Image (tube, rainbow, N blue to C red; front, side):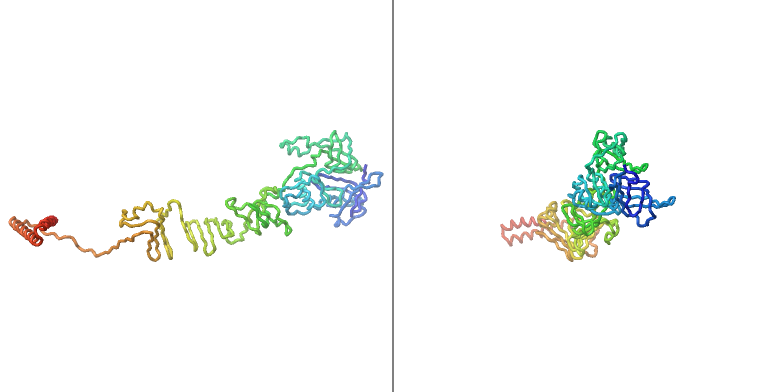
Length: 543
């Protein structure tokens, strides 16, 4: 049994006796002590905070002391009552030093164990259940070292304790079994159900797993000590100490080993966060990112998947040395992937957030502006582009060539089509595209005029007209215009010829014909005269 006189307080304060005392040790929390004591004199209060305090216990009739609590003073309130100086003091275990400042850093080595990470952060850490690999990169983001270590212990399925008796920071995770065996009275206990059961009842968990016993004792036992209590092996997982009626009474919670386990949980501050970094290496569709939160000593050890703004439309990987962001769509670290830099309006071309685009290292551009959709490429002096805007479609070939090809028909249809060129306009016909016109192209065809032809053909206008073909006849028509003149025939009045005059005219014609035939006979002889006579008859008939 330990009385109030057996509680010894060692600190900068000169506490002569303790009037009230309460201590509590719980998993996942700093151990805490609150006491009221008597002072030998009024101390310098400004010096008290952050000072260490050590509380020792001495059993009645025994001069030996044992450490109950060692921690850091958090608050001090002094007052005088009936001429006696008194103090109300509160203190936390040394682990509070880990809970002062939020930090940001990454542990990208996936084969690192939870124990190794926690020792790098907090130093003296133990726990057999922590020797498992994380399997994923771990990020400490806006977490104190205490909060981070507590989450790492949960990642291994363990609860975290801070050693209440150590003057230095010492943490352990899970069940740290002690060698001794605790003994409790069998007639003073209560059976309780942890409130967690009512939160997880829908998950199908049995009530038995959440049952625990609450009991009291005058003996000082440690967390993790066991007792064969109510027919089962039980372990101390919570502890209190309170001065009641001048005697220090210890309260304990006893439960199974499951009380030292904990489900894994995430840091919800991570959801939606983007961490900036520098691309150190590319591998397939992943990148190694050195995060800025790690400073100059940071290392890129994990290949994070890269997801460009274009999705899987094109393979567009960032170059080494460029900045990118590690984005966390959810709170879990394994959900992270790398995206492009957040828009800052630092580039004049994309200063307006409405102007979306993609530019490759080779000068190829995809322009998705508010009023234009375009593609461009080539050097600045030979830009080749296609722009589709409100004023129409524009094709530009720079100093190169613009070629339109198609397996079917290509049609340009508009009220007006203009072709403007400083030097040359050309039209080119392929043989396969003119088969339906073949009858117009070979000699003897129905063209007017008929032309030879075949093979490829071309027509060019280059300050003059040139027609080129493997075979061809140049044909054209020239028109000459004259002033109009009157070429209509003149008509005279018709008069009837007398009958006697018609008879005289017929005799005259017969005489002339007879003379002509006679002349031919004299000139050519008889045989020829017969033939010629026939000819003369034919001519005469023709005439």
